Structures are given as C-alpha cells and as structure tokens.
Length: 477
Image 1 (tube, helix red, strand yellow):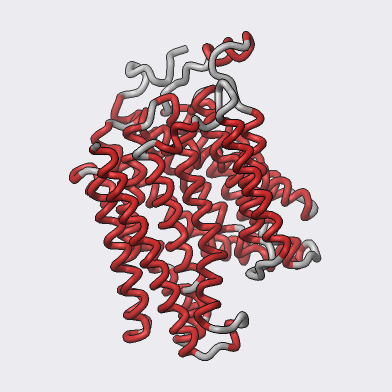
Image 2 (spheres, helix red, strand yellow):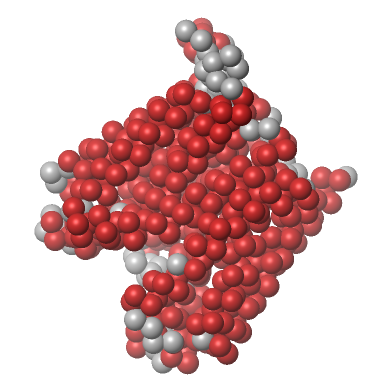
C-alpha cells in the first residue's frame, strides 16, 4: 500500500490543503464541544430530573479531562506518532459523541463527555504540532492564524447552533452533529496527514530501551491539574475551605511532579523546557492573556445587562462581536506574522491588547454599547495577533521530537488561564462592585467594577509585554 505521504499518491498542494482542512476541523470540533453543551444544561436538568449542580458535570467532565491530560497525550503523540494518535483521538471523540447522544441516564452522559474530552485533548494537543510537519515554514503563521479562527468560530457557534438543534430536534442532536463531523475529520486526517514512523518506538517499548512513556509523571500531572481546575470551579464563585484544600493538593502535586521529572530517564516534560528562553515566557504570556480574555465573558455580560440595561438577546448580540472579529482577523493575523516575523508581532499584539483593555476601562462608561464594541474591536485583533505569533515562535524553535508535548503545554497554559480568569477576574469584579450579589448592585457600581476589572487586566497584559521584552533580550544573548 502506498504511504499517505508519498507525493505520487497525493499532490503536494492538495495534500497540504487536505491536511490543513483536517486540522482545522479538529480544532473547530474541540472548541465547539466546549460551548455547545452549556446551552443544553437547563434541558438536561429537566430531562433527567437532576439539579443544576449535577448537570453541570456534563460541562466540567469534558473540561477537566482536557486540562488534566492534554500534555500527556501530546507527549504520547511524540512517541507513538502524531497522525496515528490524532486519528485515534478523532475516532474516540466521534464514538463518545454518539454514546452521549444515546445516553439513557445522566451518569452515562457524564462518562461519555469525559471520554469525549480525552479525544478532544488529543485533537487540541496535536493540531499545532502537526502544522510544523504538514505546512511549509513560510505558511506556518497563516496556518496558526487559521486554527485560531476555527477555535473562535467553534466557541461563537456553539451556543447558537446548540439552541437551534435543541429547539428543533432535541438535546441529543448536539452530540449527533459532533459525532458526524468527527468522522469527517478522521477520514480527512487518514487521507491527507503524513504517515508516522511508529515501529521503532513499539520495538523499544517492548525491549525496554529508548524513550518510554512516563506513566508516573502522567498520573501526578493529571491529579495536580484536576485539583487546580476543581479549586477554581468549585463553589460557584465562593472560595472556601474546599478550594483551599484543593489548591494545597495542587501545589503538593506540582512539587512531586517536578521532583519526579528530574529522576526518571524519559520524563513526560523535560525539566530544561521550563527554562527554555522561548517556551517559558510564551507559556507565562499565554496564561496571562487567556486570563484577561476570560474577563470579557465573565464581566462583560453583567455590565451590558446591569449597567446598560440590555435584554438577553441584545447582550448575546453584543457579546458575539468579539468571536466574530476574532474569526475574521485570525488568518490575516497569521499572514502578518509570516511577513513581519513572530517575535515582533508578539509584542505588537500585546500592546494592542493593552490599549484594548485601557479602552474598556473608559469607553463603555462614556459611550455605552458603541464604546464597548469599539474597545472589543481593539482587544480581539490584538489577541489573535498574539496567539498566531506566540504559537508560531514556539513551534518554530522546538525540537521535532518534542512538538506534541510543547503543543500540549501551549494549549494547557491557555486552558489554565481561562479557568483562572473565571475565578480571579470574577472576584476582582465583585470586589470592585462592593457586593457579592451583583444583581442588587446599582448600575453605577457595576460600571465602576467593570472599569476596575479591566484596569487590572491592562496591568496583566502590561506584565506580559515585559515578559516578552525580557525573553527577547535573553534569546539574543
């Protein structure tokens, strides 16, 4: 049988386009499945006669598995072959989506969503890693921008598509759609992605020589990340003893993980990666930026509804501005990175984000919806430019044998930033408003809280700018 990467089998341009289509669809599905289930929670509560606390695990199970395992599956892809693992991940995602659609009880639905999360972790970890092996180097930025666009489209499309499907066909339809699209992505990946060399790893694994998969590191990292994610999401905004205990467990787990990585012959994450002059600052910046972007989803709805008095439909329409702008400018941002260079565009994107955050502290209070929209139109392109440049810079310099784990670390830093932003930026906003019950606050207090929260956000992005500049100086030296 002819190898899939053989140029006699698939023309180069067609193969690259088909490969990028499969990676883009994988990225779209992983983000779509994050947001599409949220809109189904009230329906699921009625269908299974369950409380909100019970049905929210339909969302949490998916997010927790992705967060806990995304680095590990990236490393596994480096060892067994990224195409092989991506195809398997797409197959698992599709099968789990079908199982979710057919689930007769809430516990089985949650279990199916956890399995779906494992498939999505593979998809998220390996899409960026495979860009480096499927696309010419001069088009890497454009490809990264397209992946960012697909992620934004998936996030924006989820609630509206889910609402339409539930209203017309019932809640099971949202999982049937993702199952079908997953099969299409799997077929494209098998057809167009270049083949892997897995025989050497399998032989070494059987003989006990060569690089091996770090099972202990995987377990420690998964438990650490799960504890941190639960600490940030448990209590619905109230940080109590359980949250402190979980954070303590996460801290202990992180210390044990780092200790173990220095002791094993084939670590899950090489300790040297944490001091890499490109990767380490990029992970820190990615986490800070994602924390800031989450503020638009946490704080924005309260400002629009409580301070400006908008209805639910109007709030949804205004909130869609960010994802729509993100989807439109993602590929453009990637092309700019290809033309002007990744390092300079990291700083440019962060500076534009800082201006956007500063605008969010002032313009909405002065000009209402128009001011909010104008500020978002500054913040979002800056975010897309930063993402395309940051991902391109990291994946360009990383060793080819580490692409999977590094791609997983980039995705993890983004996820941890989003999780942290939910808790931290929400707490900052509540502190500035002056009451834990936002619904009882005056419009003026909510507007003031909005300004304070994005002033803090501007400070976080300014910190990211400083990290970028220092990292660039270290790299030159």
